[in-house]
Length: 451
View (tube, rainbow, N blue to C red):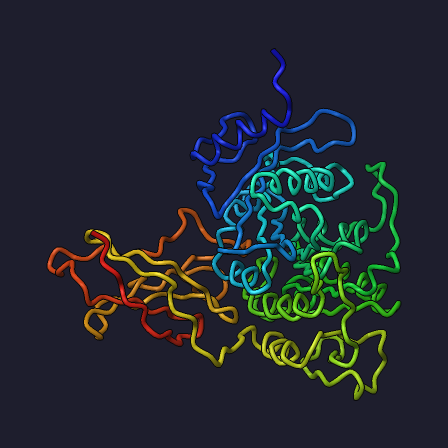
C-alpha cells in the first residue's frame, strides 16, 4: 500500500517529537525534543528537478497563549555542517523568543542537512527549492499548531552567511511578504554564476520599502583586507549602494570585534527588529504591512556612529545609513563604537518557579534588550547560589544559554533548574531572580512547593 506524502511527514514528525532521530546519510542528530510549544516538520531530500536536494527540518516555537499570530521570525543559519547543526537550536533561544513574544510572532529555526563539502548554493539560493520547501513547512506547521494564519502572516528574516544569501534573495522574490531583513555577513545572490542556470536579478521596487540591515565583522574586509572572509565587505558595499541609491531603507552596521562569527550582533539585531516589527506588522488580521514613517528615521554617514534625525541630515542621502528611529540610533552608535550595548532596566523575573522534590525548576523570560546571563537562587530572602557558578565562555557576551559562532544556543541545551544540595532543606522559602546580560537583577519569584 502506498502511504500518502502528508502521512509520511506526520509519522516522521511524530518520531522526531518523541526524540527519535534519523540515521540516514545527512540527517541531523541529535535533534532537541520538540514538544508544545515547539513543533517540528522534516522533509527528505528530493531528486526531482528544481526541488530541494537536501533534507531539512523546521522547528517552530509559539508564545504561550497567543490567539492569532502576527508574523514569523526566521533565524536562518549559514553554510556547512557546523552551521546546520547550529540551526537545530535556533527556536530554543530565550532571547529571540522574547522578541517573538513581544509581537505575537512565531520563531522558526530551519536546519538544512548539507553534507560536508556539498554546494551550499543548492539550498541558500531559494530558487533551488528551499523557497518552496519553506512555504510548504509553514503550511504543514499551520495544520500541526492549529494556526492557519501561519500560511499568510508576514516574515521577519535573519540570516547569517549563506543564510544571509537566502534571506536577501527571499527579499528579492517576496518583498510584499517581508516585514524586515537582517543580513549578517551575507547578501542576496543577484548575479548569475557560471555554474548556475538561474538568472540574474534586479532589486524590485517593492523591496525598497522593506527595512534591511547589513551587518558584518570588521575583519571581513573593512579593517582586515586579506584572508578567507575579506571579500564580504565589498559584496555588502555594492548591495548597499544599489539599494540605498534607489532610496531603499537600508543600513550598514560593522561589528568592531568580530570576523565571520556573529559576535554581539543580537544586541543590535533584536532592538532593530523590535522597532521595525512594531511599526510594520498589520494592526488587523486582514491588514497589509504598514509603511515606515519617514519622520521617525535617523541617518548616519556610512561607517560612522554619528546619527541624526533624517530631517537634519545634510550629507549625501545615497551613502547614508538608514535607521528606523532614535532608540535604534542610540543602540547602533554603541554597537559600532565598541560592540557593547547597554541596558538601563532590570530584566523581568521568572514566570513560574516550582520546588519539585529537591529540584527547583522555573520558566525563564529573557530581557528583550540584553537576554539572560544567569540566575540567583535565594532562600529566605538571602542569596543561596548562582548559576552558572562560573561563567561559561562563548563568542560574544557571556549568556546562560552559551550562544556561539552561529548565534544559537549550544547543545546540550542549558536547563533552568537547580538541584538543592543534600545539606539544604527541601521546603518553602526559595525564590529565583534573573540576571540580564549587563548584570542587572530582576525581582524574585517565590517558589511554590509541588507535592
